[in-house]
Length: 294
Image 1 (tube, helix red, strand yellow):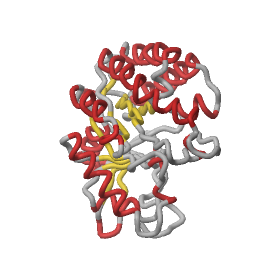
Image 2 (cartoon, rainbow, N blue to C red):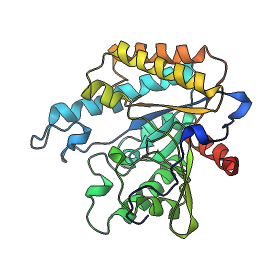
Image 3 (tube, one colour):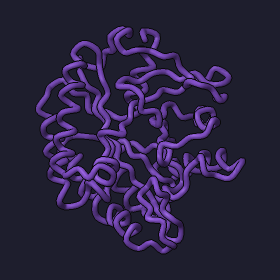
Image 4 (cartoon, helix red, strand yellow):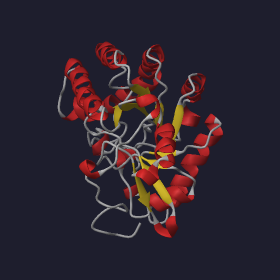
């Protein structure tokens, strides 16, 4: 992607699009994205990830995130399985070697794994010149070796990209990307050489990290945010399908005093008939098959 004033896609107001049809007449495509991340104890946690700026080892900051990988993620697995939701994991590839038990447990649940850089202490737009192609190639290959499946999607650490990221992802065989949180429906990105990616809607809003760490929402407030977001998208989706992403982090939603509120939100959504509980790849694949209508 060459530097430009707008993205590699046309401006498309949602009121001017033909109706988007989901399978079985669903109003909403629901996908849940646990961000399962690795933070190295000997590296600073970036400010955008909640780093305090103190010298390493920053034990309090690191410990809360390690709790998510030791305990919280397994609570999330139990809750999502109870509600029939197959997660799409944004996975730091270094976690494959550091915590293979999480990979094994996720594979038993048939979770989807998408690339999320190597570590959450390093962002693509902070990489040394020439390093980005290696980082993307290595992250995807590592996840493929560990999980048995090549990732079809990508979420950058901190949702950060460079001008080269999209072309590098397409060249490595990715089908969709989630960094561009600018729509309630998927759309096609056209890149250099005619390659394409599907932008699948992710969320800054229905995301426990800003909700709890930046805006100091309570667990019940986050539950209500999820339900209200769903209500509007479900109503609008009766005319043209919508995507609802719920982004969660094991060290935040997976703690004891928040998990029940999250489960209550999933139960509320589950009481509605026209919901497609799906994954990033399934959304991207369905949209590509019908993209000529959009």
